[in-house]
Length: 341
Ligand code: F6P
Image (cartoon, rainbow, N blue to C red; front, side, top):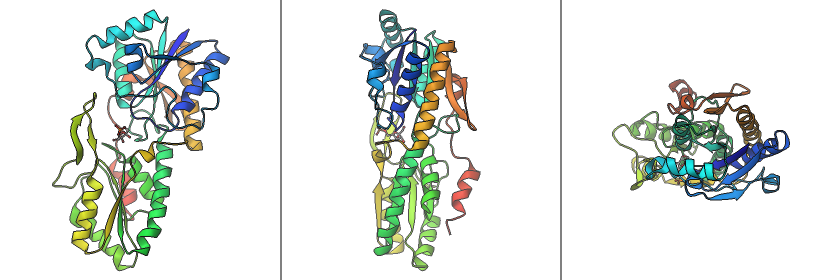
């Protein structure tokens, strides 16, 4: 078989580990051939390809980013997008696609599968918000980066009797804030799933100052106060209808400063969370996903996404995986709340 591989959406550590595993087992065990499609769905849409063999995947296991590059292209927003993809696949003799991506990229894969394209999905996102899988790779790395930042911020905050607000990624799901906040010993964790009461946050912060301890508040970029909405950087939407978030951390630091009379600073971690080398956990998960994805392709088990359930890698229907976002349930948030006072 000749199989195309693409990576779409926001990048995350571990993408190269998946590509490597797919190609190594695909060539070594099954004797398949591969073609790399560049820049997410733009690759098959505009026939942007690159060679993808054993040589190309040497040494990429620890490398962040994606050798295939990425984009947020949505072929369903482009005139005759699906027809163009089908034509390009046929012209290049490509029998199937392995699409590595999050909700948007795999949403496209789900629709293409229904339209007769042979496709296998691999879930990635630092946000960990894809359904049907316990974890996505990239998440563990992002959490570790955020945790290390929080550890460092504790000591500088303490020296200056300051509160520090740490804004992390997470549009609709607060997994990074929750896990980094718990691991880093945050005073307060604020996530998109639970609107927060500013007065209560200020009270938690004040209590910390009273015991001469400088509070760290971890907040997801998509978190909202009870009487407010998400704060956006620009009004522009991407091809999947997402706005660019950002600003809630600075807003909160400003409010804390005004209401407590103490100094507050905001640190926005941003894309630092997505760059660089993956943790061992993410390398292993990404590798296992890649191996299972090429097994599924070899079996002709189209329309499936590989997923981690418990300790096993399983195959689930793509449609099931992309039906709804996996958000933080109230009882998990309660684990962080136990440390707010
Ligand atoms: O979807 C993953 C993610 O990291 C979100 O948490 C974040 O909102 C978004 O990507 C930012 O993406 P970019 O700035 O690359 O468009």
